[in-house]
Length: 153
Image (cartoon, rainbow, N blue to C red; front, top):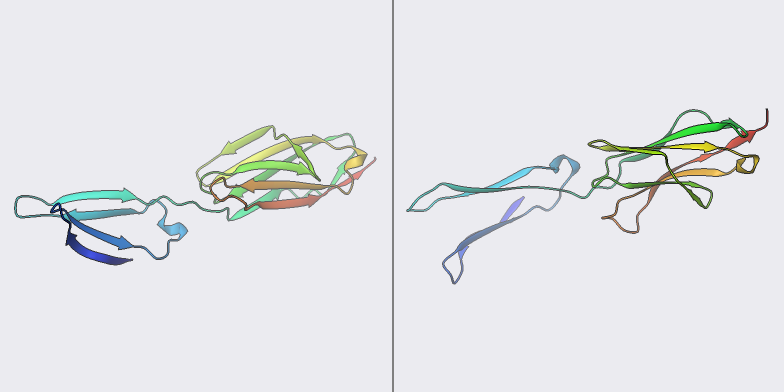
């Protein structure tokens, strides 16, 4: 952090000072920056701001160890997206077909979504994808995939 102007008086007699923060990290989220001033008449006077950041996800993960599923039996899948700010929009895809999740929950630093799916024989060798999109970072997508093995008992 560097002060770019230690205090200059403009035409209206107002003194202004500014700083530049070259690099912000996740650790700086909600950091409070304050400015304190005083003059011959009074003070000190203080004003503060909180630093809010737009952050990409740290991870997108389809949870569970199952890779094989029985045909025509429902299977539940869960995807967790950690670290995105604001919370991401999460979608499920089976190859190129968008699926509707049945449950989404948001916590402070994590968004989880669950999907209940009855797999048909046609889903064998299909790719299930959990895709996260931070609306403030257009054009960037984070995802995890799972290759399905659907078998007949």
